[in-house]
Image (cartoon, rainbow, N blue to C red; front, side, top):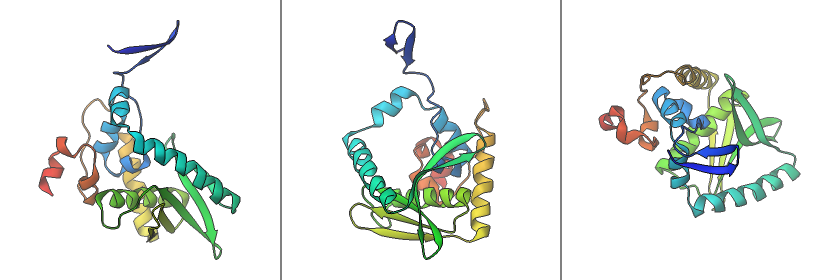
Length: 192
């Protein structure tokens, strides 16, 4: 087992499941289940310089949004799990979920994932409008009906029911399979 010593009595087990879960993982019970079982070592291995650059620029942008009256790093709790939306701003008396990304390319697979992420935030914050803003100048508006948001909440809550299961949960097939990090292990991806 690979361990990193922090103090005499504290260590990091790199092979231990991370328990990490992003709100977009809740789109499918299998994806959520697998995400929580990804080891710390695999998460670290997948990180790169672009992510670090994204984090630094992200913080600078959120400070600007906050200075303009937006609520930033908005907490969302779903069945005891905690998530954060980048910001909720107000326009013409209507709340809008704002998700900031380093780069947004309309029609790309990753942008489709961003849309699902924003709809998840909208569903749990009770907001019917969202926007993805790329630091490359691209802006994508997102709207959803109450019925669509209710469906999103139901799927997310179902996914959370399986997190502690020892056996693999059911897979949920949809457009999100194209951007799922576990698609190579999942039979659903081969059906699309």
